[in-house]
Amino acid sequence: MTVLDTPEKRAAAVEQWRGAQEAARRHRIKQVRARTEQHEGDWQAPSSRSVQREVEAAFAQVGDVANGGRRQDQDHAADDQAAPLKLSEQELDGLRATAWGQLVQGETDLITGTVNVMGSEAAAHIYCADLVRCAR
Image (cartoon, rainbow, N blue to C red; front, side, top):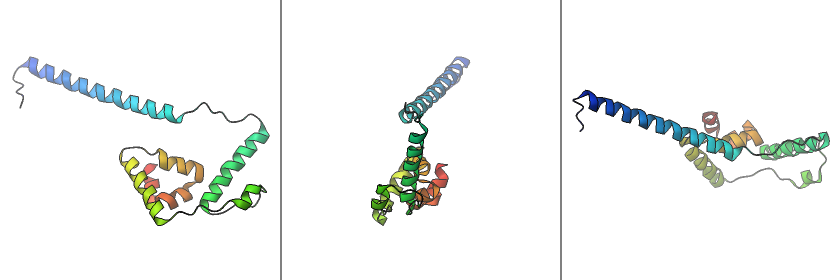
């Protein structure tokens, strides 16, 4: 146990505490920057309107397949071959355990990425509504 019986000792302890607080703050900033840089890419949306429609259709198709349905207004050959996303309970439990472990560590990217790509309903089906709600 440290005895802080002089003003110099107290001042040194306060400075040590402030230094530790600043180091923790800088560490958090580095973590956020690293995570942001990891997920930010230099990909830009296509400028051609026809290519933009193709990209939007592809994202919608992925979301529909994940939700177990298919878009009726698309006539792509891949639609005939696409099967709804079917996962066993064991696979779902594994995904939920992974998502929970990341959520406990403050990482929400897995769940929010699923919500962004597949929609809230599909994410709630995969991870459960409580985990999706916690990640937001």
